[in-house]
Amino acid sequence: MFCHAPSVPDSDPDPDPDPEPDPAPEPDPRTTKVHFDDNEALFLAVVQSRMPTILEPNDTLISSFPGTTRELLTHLLQFMYGKLVDSDIRVLMRIIIAEGNKFPELVELYHREAASKGLSLLERVVARGVARGEVKADHAPLLHMTIVAPVMMAAIWRMTFDSQERIESEDFIEAHLDLLFNAPFETDSASS
Image (tube, rainbow, N blue to C red; front, side, top):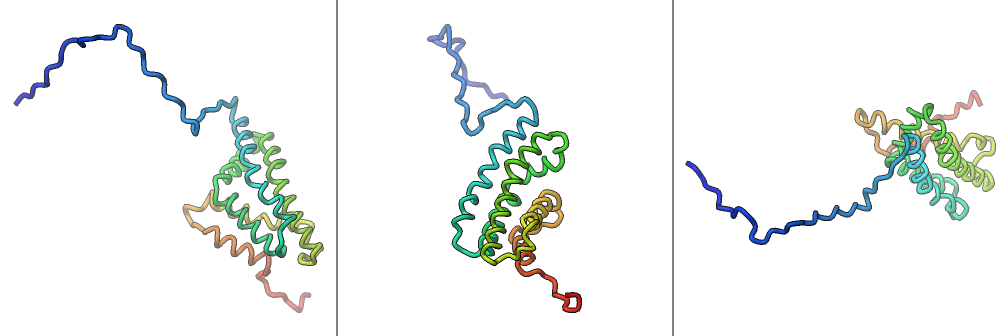
């Protein structure tokens, strides 16, 4: 059985001898292409664009927070887990950990713009706690690093082992706060 296509005239009755091509579509502003000379320039631009959004909201919070240092730390740790563990920022950490030795400017920038500023914020929280009698002064010198260490562990776990054994951020936060505020070990009166 054969089907016949409808007949089509051989030529257009009013042919346009010089048709203009369709104009190029307008670029979508959400997908603007930017050229970087190399991967380091790309990484630097990403770090520079993301760091202010992580730290700025908490800078003014510390001086104006009305609650206890424990409440302030709880708030800051929840914020840190949200930004460093549950967002794509951890991809930057992965790049810095894995490729930092190849990109010293990236490491320097991340340290200057993120790590040192974040640690400085935590030092201010610890100093606030010491001044208010809420934090033991003899624990203060490296407490800011001790506070952030479990957050980094959670981020590394999420990047590396999440598909093998997922641990929800809420569970990490709860264990972190318990470790920080309640020291899980019993005091041995014989050794004190």
